[in-house]
Length: 407
Ligand SMILES: [Zn+2]
Image (cartoon, rainbow, N blue to C red):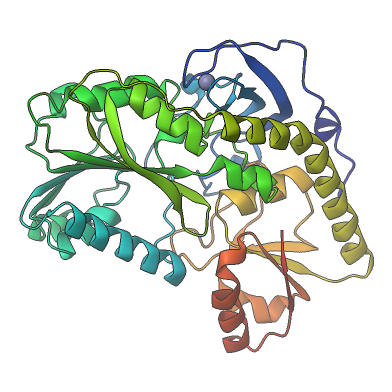
């Protein structure tokens, strides 16, 4: 089932160390690991198997910046990524995620007195978070997203939400917004400082505006060995240190920057800084810690990869079937790294938007939970431990008795 994969043997970083950090511009960088030839848009699900297998690929060559603690893909080519309609990253179908975002929206409206005021979201997807902010009391929502489908335009109009299918630009920055938020976008941006400065320019004369940015937490990936978090779309892997340094360099005063969602995300609240570019706090302790985590990461990655290769072959040898729960980027990365065939490993998702579509690279068809009893999986591979209770409840509702393991 899992062919030994030539692509995975080249995990040893290549020689061209010292490229410029995309967050802070320092050349004090070191290579971490290479994942060559992976699908460039793992969240762009295909309508046919053929289209999925022939999806465009690129190389992820991860480097670490010793100066600001940032991790980035030094081979990232933004021209390869076109975010169009069909790009699917919404997690809003999960109960656990839903209560997290509701709480977050409530906190922002409360903390920043957003009742009746205008909020702007950069990269708003289908407007789920804007809708929540308005539900919690914000008066008007303005969103930007190139992959917006327009499907819920009528509902949005009734809620006083307008979404433009475009990138956010400085000309669009002036909406008298009390809050500008941007969640899970910055890690996709080839020049993150440029985006931060763009946002900052839109705030000229509005020192009261606050911003909220959220990104995946790279320290979680390093510590908990979230090796399925490494995807081509993410050219940046932010740490608390690199995220804070970036916003200070971009002219913001960081109010708070902290772990969210069980440590998997970083959330940052900031205000425009009146004193121009703020200095960098001493992050030496954090940077030293990151450096040692990064050093062992490549070796631990290889061990985990080989362990999974062994487990899947054993399973296939017994003629048992496993199912990956969740066709998000982690599940898709797992399939593309280990490449089990559909006879032994299925992929299921609770989102109707994903069901019946095909995984870029591996070509697996995404199943509905209802299809599982017929396939009788013995093992459910959970891509994110945070959903364990939710998945266990769904399995028992389906009458399935399968072992749940975390990937
Ligand atoms: Zn840096």
